[in-house]
Image 1 (cartoon, rainbow, N blue to C red):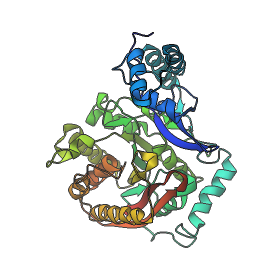
Image 2: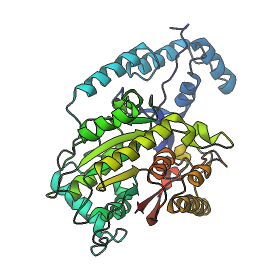
Image 3: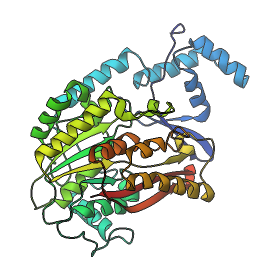
Amino acid sequence: MTLEKPRLRPVEAVPVRHDGQTLVALRDPERLTGELVIVPAATFLILALMDGTRTLREVQAEIQRHFQQLLPVAELEGLVSRLDELCLLDNERAHIRREDLIREFDRLPARPAAHAGTAYPAEPDELRRVLEGFFHSPDGPGADGRPEPGRSPRGLITPHIDLSQGGPTMAWAFNELRVPDPPELYVILGVAHRPTPNLYTLTEKDFETPLGRVRTHREAAARLKALYGAERLAGQYAHRFEHSIEFQTIFLRHLHQGGPEFGILPILCGSMEEELTQPEGSPRERPDVAGFCEAIRRLMEEFGPRVCLIAGVDLSHVGLKFGHQRGVDDFQAELIRAADRRMLECVERRDSGAFFNHFRADLNARNVDAVTAVYTLLEILGPGPARLLKYEQYREAAMESLVSYASVALD
C-alpha cells in the first residue's frame, strides 16, 4: 500500500458548516458510490494531495512540510482503504464498478426518474399541483399569459436549476407551448455535467416521470444516427443521473397530459471550453459541431414544422460553492446581471458567433454551463426573432454563491 500512488477520482466538493466546524461534502457525480461522504476540511486537504503523483510516504512528507504534523502512514493507509471501498479512487475497483453500472443501465427498458422525490414531488397529484402553481406564481406567466393562437416557438431556452428555485421561470418558457397544436417532436439539448466521450450524447431510452412515461422518438433517433453517425452519439450512461433533460420532460408530460402524443430526442452537450482559449475561429469549424448542426437541421426539415428545439441550461455559477476565492455580494450580483444581459442580447439577435465570443475575453469566468447547448441551438435555427421571457438569479447565502437562469423563446 505504501508504494502506491492513490488518485482521487473527480468529485464535487462543497464546504458546509456544522456546529461551528467547517466540513467538506464529497459527492460522486458518477454515483459509483451512493453515499455522500463528509470529511473535515483538514482531511480534504490531504485528499487533494492524492493526485496520482505521490506515494503515501510522499503525502506524509507534504503534510509535515505544510502543517508541521507527522501523520502516521498507517492512518493514511486506512483513509485510502476507505476511499477504495467507496470507489472514490481512480483504480481497477472503480473501473469495474463503472462497467457494471453501464451494463445495468443498458438493460433498463427506460431511464428512471432519478430526481423524483428530491428535486420535485414523486406523487403525481402533488407534482401536477406544484407544476401548475409555477404558471400561476407571481413570478410566472400568470393565468392569462397564454401565447397568441397559432404561434408556436421553433426553439426554447429554459433552466434546469432545482424546480424549487427555477420552476416559475421554466413556466415562462413552457407556457409558449400552450397552443392548440403543440409540437410533436422536441429535440432537447441538455448539459452534460461530467465528461463524456463525445460532444453530443444520445439515449434512445424513454424517460420515466411520475406523470407517465415520455417516449423517445425512435424514428427521429434512428434518422439522427444515420445522418451523423451512431458512434459519434455514444455514451448513453451519461443520461442516467443527469437532471438537465429530466426536468424538461416533466413539464412536457404535464403540458401534454390528455392531449396529443409527442416524442423527444434527448441529447446531452459536452464542453467546448478548449475553443475559448483560441483567440479566433468558430466552433462551426469543428467537424463534430458542423456535422451535428447540419444533421439536426435536416431532421427538422424532414419531420415538418411541428418540431421544437429546447436547450435546458443555466447561466452563471459564481461564488464559493463553485470554486471562486470570494463570495457574491450585491454589487457582484449586479455585475453578473449586466454580463448575463450582454450575453442574452447575443441570443436575442440569434448571433451564435457573438454569443460564443462573449466568453472568450475571460475564458468563461462566470462558469456559464449553457455555452455548447445554446451555441448549437443558435447555429441550427439561424436568423429570426427571439424574446427574453424571464431572467432570475438564485442567491445561496450560506455559500455566498449565485446561479442565474433565464427563459427565451425563438420564433
